[in-house]
Image 1 (cartoon, rainbow, N blue to C red):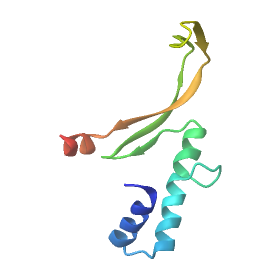
Image 2 (cartoon, rainbow, N blue to C red; image 1 turned 180 degrees about the horizontal axis):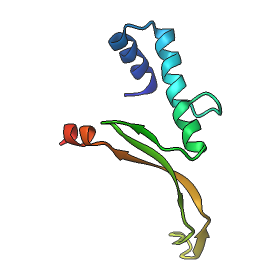
Image 3 (tube, one colour; image 1 turned 60 degrees about the vertical axis):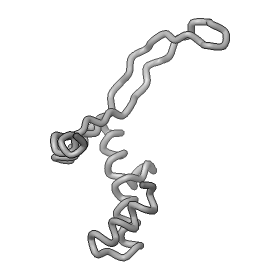
Image 4 (spheres, helix red, strand yellow; image 1 turned 135 degrees about the horizontal axis):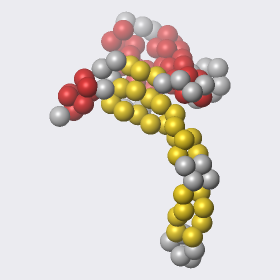
Length: 96
């Protein structure tokens, strides 16, 4: 499902107009600063917990070495923040 399909399905399920559903999806998932609730919370170091669905959390991945497959040379990757998603019990159960 892509973003547009999600908007159309949300409009149908929640009885919203397409512009209302588009605003709701943007309010949750936008990555622009100040627009998306999830991205803003992660950027501020908060966990985002949707009970039954799962938890989003930003974490630091430490520095590490990797080998360039083309040259075989070892290089160092700097620490970087990554998003981790851990599915909730309800989602795990449904997907079994």
